Amino acid sequence: MDNIDEIAEKLQNALFAGYSKRLKEELFNTANAGAMENPDSHVRITGVCGDTIEMFLGIRDEKIDDVKFLTDGCGFTVACANYVARTAKGKSIEEAFGIEQDEVDRYFEGLPEEHKHCAKLAVITLRALLEKYRSKPNPAKPSNANNGK
Image 1 (spheres, rainbow, N blue to C red):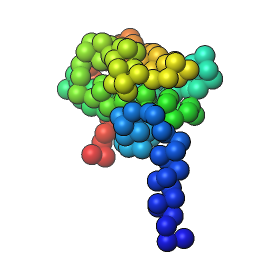
Image 2 (cartoon, one colour):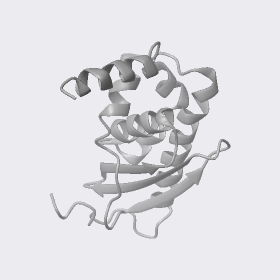
Image 3 (tube, one colour):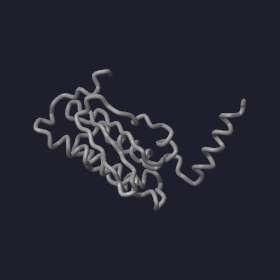
Image 4 (cartoon, helix red, strand yellow):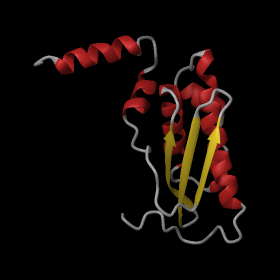
């Protein structure tokens, strides 16, 4: 049992052989995973593959302060949702609408063809989240999402 970390590392390397370092980093450093209390917007979208991404939005001073996500999807969906959430932070709503599926694919140095839909689902979910926020009667209100900071 002394070499359990070594065994785990070898298993991870075998499972993700051939995938980009960035994909592995997003998958294993999911700082944006989780729910958010009192979000300024919240959506849940299910893709054609059956994976679901749920996203939560926190706005402060007219900028995206935080984006969190939950998913029941595969590792590619987790990595794409994490990247999209991280990339949206600090942007205005309009700037975040500019995040594209191709950008996600390029960041990961080309997702496998059978997982490109994961990037599309992450971007669609973000856009639905932003659109729902934008359609609120008074979307410029201060966020309650991060009272615990």
